[in-house]
Length: 258
Length: 257
Image 1 (tube, rainbow over the protein chains, first blue to last red):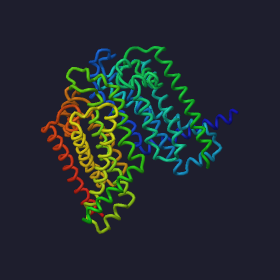
Image 2: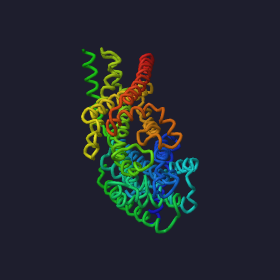
Image 3: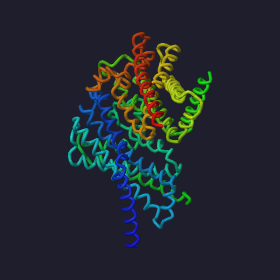
Image 4: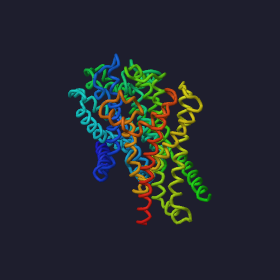
């Protein structure tokens, strides 16, 4: 039992190292995941910054309000990028060799997911540093830890979702589906304004979208204080979506012939 | 006449290619539609801000921005498709064929313009479904379609120039985020009086702001000659720069073999 677990952990470590190697060998691969959320953060802050003048807006700093969304957006893109890499491995036949190896399916998926979670720290840190430069509030140690945990959780969900899509369609052409769904999941929340100021369909969707809990938990330290009541719903959402999408990804692997 | 037939055929191929590749069509329609839907509802109360132009809803204001965003992305997608043709050797075969060289680029641009028209119709339909009133009626709608089509053509020249210069789809793809930089630094999503600095100053001189305003005019106010002329001037400026760059890049590519 112990020996099997050691072997599985070693396989996971090897898959994480493989992902890290890509960053070292092709540093440009990380650029889109960093650039897109940074551009969106700076752009949306410049464009919609005046919204803080509306009565009922919860902060006078739109940069502080928007930064959690951009950090989660970066995590979503990073997770989706792992799915694109998986689709590439499937296209090249490399994944067939992984499936033919003695490594259990869950080990292959875990290696992928942990790689995404770790890599999501890069865009989050970059955009967080930019946000501090342009005047966003520092969230405090507790707020920062919660924000990074939510970022890594979102990357985990995105990696599982992208793995489901990659295993279903087996082509990199499906990448818009991986990225767009994650973008929509993060944006169809209280991303642009507090719940009370949302209008139309988004007011209803944001109320029921589980990602709203993740956005609000990530935002805690940046806008207002940190509380357990504001944190636990995000933990439940991340855990539930990881289990559900992880199960679907594993089912996709079982159905993949080699 | 024969040259026109070549341009039309290459344009047709370009449109078919865009519809067949999800990674080319998705950014044109899905991303601008998603942002239009989310921003119009997420920042819908912006119309209550002092200084916001009188509009029925924020959706009315954003519609032109979404159309021009889509036209910009059509230009980018056209560039990516041309670069793929270069990578796959298809352009080399066209260069060896007895057709004028400019027809190769013109065919691609015709396809890009056609995609611009498709997206303009898509967003107009969306707008009408979700209650937008085109103040200038059918003529205003036709003018919007024309302006968006010409804009896609103009932005397509920039994408084509980059494709011809680099010959690499990933390089052209890499400029995708720049589309959003240009958009955020214009009045595509918000009136310039309410933008924060330095975006406000840049937006006041960004040709894209003039183009968006010309497209938006028939929706939120009455027809205005000066704004239409400024929009057309913006399109001519972008297209002129793009065509010059295209010509230089094509000549360089032919010289280098």
